[in-house]
Image (cartoon, rainbow, N blue to C red; front, top):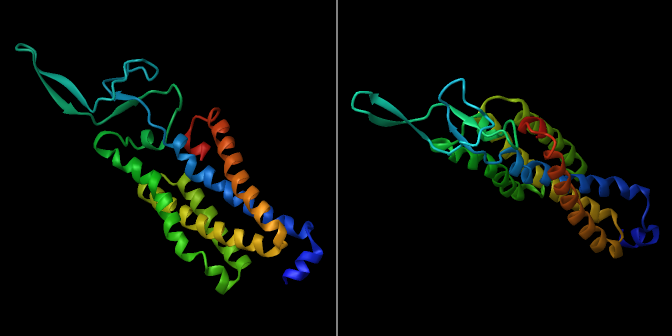
Length: 226
């Protein structure tokens, strides 16, 4: 096999696995690095009424609001806010602002961001599925599940389903990453494997990281950006 690949060299038949691996490598940036923008922290304040200005500069990131309980004695008490107004300077909506994941719920923002990476860790244990079931078949099945999970994150309104889908996205990414990279190496002549592998790995992540950063400047809704 190695001798045959050496004689054939590089050809058009190697382009599909190279491009596929490049896109899969880049999807790490669009799905995991992108949480820097889709869940960017936003300044907030307690909602006190319809006159609250979402573009004002009075955002104090306070979880409590002080109300006068007795106007005669001017005694005041602090109450935990139930509604919030967010600074819309950079984004109109993020994952955290849509579900009010601030104050006592702020930990769910961390779960949203890390669930995908936890999925990547678990996916590492299943990257060898292609050895048993065939790389192309495993990639086709995993890609379908990957795309469904991405759509769930962007369209489903229920927060737990979104977090579970984020885990599946990370899980599928790592299986696709390992399987596609192995397939690409298998169809390349030995002398080209190291340079092509290095370029594809670094170019995919770098280009799509720059791409998502540029696009996020113009798209202010986290669901549309996702």
